[in-house]
Length: 308
Image (tube, rainbow, N blue to C red; front, side, top):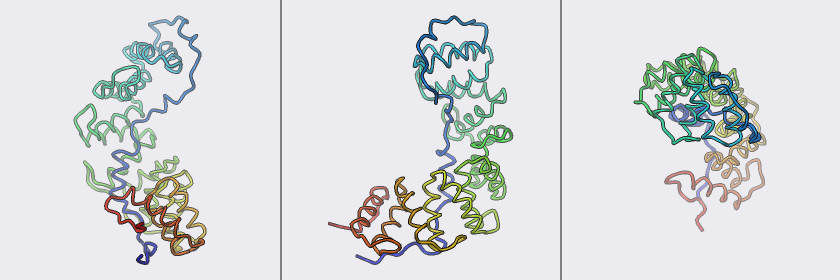
């Protein structure tokens, strides 16, 4: 077997493309509204004033949580048609996910737009996602950006992140690394993990900001502590080489292991190298081969480094 080396200094992730992937597919439609406990079915028997949108919305949530999605849709529709913005948002999400109704991206986009036009930040974000992906509407990056700007100005972290990715990638807009950084800083300060990772990469590469490996490590650690697998791998690389942090092979291995346990392919490969060479760990060729095989399962055209 050929001797394998840990990636050299400065060879962190190939992030520019990855960030655009996050922008297009990473955050996605927000559906935190559905994460609730089921309620007793007794709520079905209670009367509700059909002219009171707030009552309809509250009852609709209770019925939805009890698992009666079809009945919930009727209540949300009645309230939404009265202009109840939260009902419009939930109805849009139900059409988007196909809960209680047949999945229909066109109707989802229509209800998102009604709520967004009333200034609902989450609806504006979700509508931007649909325009960015071309789901239920014609793909239009300009409109996606406009809706995200409306939402981001209200402090919506996902919209701020998405705007940053747009400016970073120059997608439907002039590439502006400085503006990308500014939006990511706003989002990262709210704990947005992908923005924290993106800032770490910017400071590491010096793109859109003065290169600063100490700040890079700080932002990567914030993301890594939230379970971001690529950040965990990249932080491990920095500890391995002593970039922005004191060189520490033990910590490097710990971060590689965290990332590898989440299925991060590059971490599986790197950790396999360390076990094969016995760097910071007891040499274990079987474990190295097991990690490399996990890596090859995820990596097209990867060569099996441990043939039988």
